[in-house]
Length: 134
Length: 388
Ligand SMILES: [Zn+2]
Image (cartoon, rainbow over all chains, first blue to last red; front, top):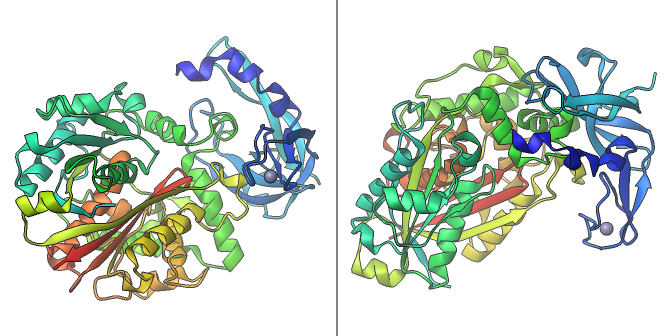
């Protein structure tokens, strides 16, 4: 699909995707990922970008057995909601662990990994995934 | 605001319509609703088309003019309304507002989706356009996986057994047997559901609404128009309400509740001055079994974590505490995505006009439908009242 093969579209997200840049609301103190200009919780327009902590816990997870486009052949793989040490929540992949060994509450740490390729000979999209801390 | 009535309703069977195109399905349902209304189609002043994926699956947008033209109604204002899986409900909402505001006396709404033209992988990608492409689709999460995470969270939080929630699918299949419009008119056993393949853990294949084609349509009008074109067995849309929630599931404060549904439902119940206990027939958006159970809990029919009891005790069947998805719901009537919200109202209309055959709920006066878009990033609800 045309929209999935845009270099600038990925490039402009690079700080948020490579360095886990979230936003902290100066009004209600919510911390969200990714960073944006307006707080989704209180509507305040004074979010500040912050690098999020690398450690967190698994809140909930699933095993994708029918992969979406761009992830063919990678199944089964794990996706999870991770709550970071400062309370921010991130949707990400869990790696270096078998699905049957994942538990809610499990401690995880961020790692830099490959996500997908934009068509043959296109750019490779990288980002943050999480692996068990121990 | 003016009162809004359902003057007519029509639908195609939900299923694999290999011989029918998106536009043919829409035209069939629309003309059947106009025929049911007993009016000339030239009387219809505006058309709202509920659809989610025609751009992705057919490469076709601009459905308003297309469907109006193929129905012989070119000339009138006509628009596509999109809100992911709540597109149908959103289209009914727009049609309702158009009449309630006094802008038009008589309008039509048709919800349509044609899913079998595309490969399953294309349907998966098209459904995912409802989610955040940059931060959800990017990590490989599918629509089923997102709902699966809500499901797992719920099961753990309340210590509920999956087979108790999965029973919702068994109920829906049982109801669909007598519905001539349903995609799957056959029963399934709980063992079949629990042994069907995992799609995204813990969700199994038979806990998911199927892929299918279909179209459903309604003709809505105000009171003066109704006086000129009276019909027996009259149903009023006593309230139409919609709400949004924070877009992505992981950004919400609570994963186990459906805030947009609660908000829209409270608004509709208040406007119609109806207590939830007075609902006689409920249409739940059971794209996955867990959503059916959450719907029951949000309306207060069961405490949190205990909605499954109503399912297991058989309280969702006609004669039970809260007859739900009495025509099969998304699971067995079918879920042609952008048409579903209109099918829900069509099914309630069927009950309130006593056309439900062996699934008829006795003395059904009030019907309520909740239509979720995405993982309920949008909800549209409709409250219908039989007028005697
Ligand atoms: Zn805030």
